[in-house]
Structures are given as C-alpha cells and as structure tokens.
Image 1: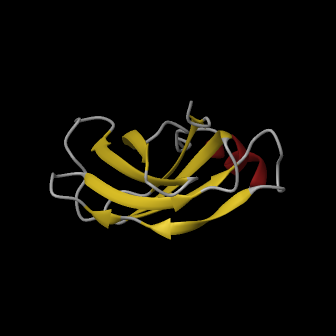
Image 2: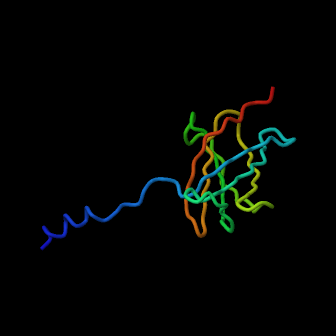
Image 3: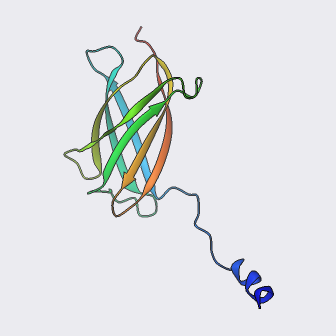
Length: 121
C-alpha cells in the first residue's frame, strides 16, 4: 500500500519561495549618528494593492560580519498612506546592512533587503 501512496506525494504542489509581499524601503538619517527613519511601503506581489493592517517588524544584520553586528527587530507603526509603515532603527556602524522585515497579518512573509548605510560625506 505504501508503494502506491509515495508517487501521489509528488503530485502535491509545494509552496513557492516567491515573495507574497512587494516592498520598497527608504531609510533617511536623523540628526543622531547611525539612527535612521525608515519608510516601508508594502504591496501585494500579485495585485500591486497596498497591504494594510499588517504587523511589521524590522531588524538588521551586517552581512560582511555575520553574527558580530546585528540590530534587534523593532515594530513599525502604520503610516498615513495605505501600505505605509514607519520605523526607526539604530545601527552599530556604517556599511552594508541586510534589513529583515517580518510581515504578519492577512499576508505572512519575511523579506530581506540589503541597503548601504555609508558614512555621511
């Protein structure tokens, strides 16, 4: 009996690794060194419609020094526009950071984006 069930398991569609949520992230420096205000825009990857009512947290790791430099996740607050979320992050040093967004609610996703936080010139 088990021989007949094994091939059926191959017919079950596996979840795709494609993102369910599209994201645009823009982080601007504040007056304090290494502190940034981030604006996060979430939209449904298929329809392009804004994703509202989600719980969003954002953390960061420095890819060039794994596990040496990381920032604990902070909860983003809903912004004024649909699908807009705002968060303030404080980094440990300048350089490239991988921002990790954890999106929960009607849509669930984890998104990682690399951004360059270079020292001001």
